[in-house]
Amino acid sequence: MKTFYLGGDVSKGYADFVLIDQDRIQTEPCFRLDDNAKGHTALETLMRKVVMQNPDAQIRLGVESTGGYESNWLKTAYNLSKSLPISSARINPCGIKKFMDADLIRTINDEVSARYIAQYMIAHPDKVHYDQDDQFYSLRRQWTSLSLLKKTTTQLSNNLHSLLYTANPGVLVYCRKGIPGWVSSVLEKYPLASALAKARLATVASIKHVGPVKAEALIRHARSCVASTDDPDMAFTIKQMLLQIKSMSLSISTIEKHLTAKWKDNSEILLVSSVIGIGVMSAIGLILNIRDVRLFPSVKHLASYFGIHPKWKTSGDGEWGYHMSKIGRSQPRSILFMAAMSAVVHNPVIRKLYKKCRRKGMVGLAAIGVCMHKMLRIVYGILKTRQAFDPKIDSRNQQKSTLRVPGVSEQKYEEKLRRYQQAELDVPVSRRQAIKRKRATGPKASVSPSTGSPSPLKKIVAVKAKDNKKICFS
Image 1 (cartoon, rainbow, N blue to C red):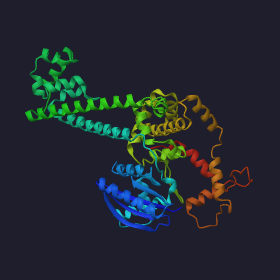
Image 2: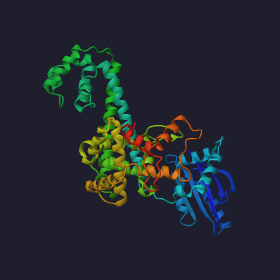
Image 3: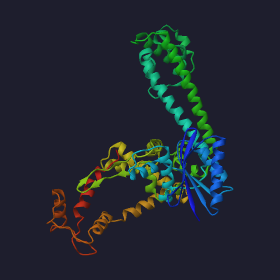
Image 4: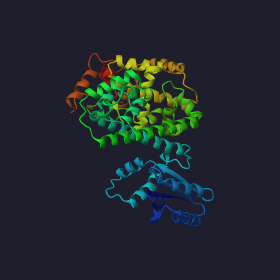
């Protein structure tokens, strides 16, 4: 059986394709098809031609994930798979880029990209997942729309605060945690301090949720304020911004209610939301980013995907401290951060971990980073076992971890590295390495329980145990 690989570099409105065989020989030069009915028909004709010439052939189509532009091509390939031996996959562009960097590619164009997408499918078959149905595609689009609305609303609110600082600063006293609805109602009638200063007390007090006390305070602040702007155009701008914020806030509320009502009974979302501190909306956001827990062989892979794994760099004699890698998209980390902040208050397991980290000397945000990592491990566990969150299970796991002898894994690793030759001093090593070896082979060196010889890791384990208080996420 012969396998053909069709790599597609997708752009807005068209795509470039290159067809190669399993020996990486190009069987069809680069060709470009438009993303319309004629282009998709031409792709189908070509696929049928390949199958006719090679009856036992398998065709694998791979396209980069480009934010939705590749979806039409994947749908066509899925429809063709019902009658032709075709498999299709959406590929992470980060993997393609690293693959091209490894080959020292200097010139990049659509043809080169399409060819390397096809070669990537051959070189890394374990990284390509074919014919996977994205059950959360529509939900992901809704979530993207919701995120854009929230971001725009925040930008408008910040801009409105800046305008009010010079136009009506008295109302900002009540806007430290956002703009309340009654403040918006006041500003719709009196956007400028000069207008509010001339208003009647009874009129302002009649606004819903204002009352005589707030009305008197608002008018008093308006009469004594130092507002530098008294321009009708500024009043018009403030009113328009209020209308936009109100409209977007209503849209955000409507979308959140729709998502909650539709997905709150989903089995995976129910499992994730069983963790104290993770609400339904946060659970939806996490599931959208995880998609399928089977894609991650271990929780370390999931932590790396989220970019919250501790990053430690050591090379030769140089050592650098731990810190959160923050590699990848920031949106899943922001969801996990807010969930961890809530869990520190309401979840006993996370609160205990947070206090433990603070006692070790970690700053607040560093301790929150550890809590984020812990919550992600909990989410991974409940999705793997299909069991709701149970603090007793976590307690049993903690007891198992306390039975481990500190430093044993490091000792075994160092002994494995030195299994053919013990550390010696009469070699041209650096001053730092010489000090390590002297301390490891000195008269007070510990004795390895397996070989009876001095363990070369005495100083390394001691340093790591001593510096545990300094390890943090930044």
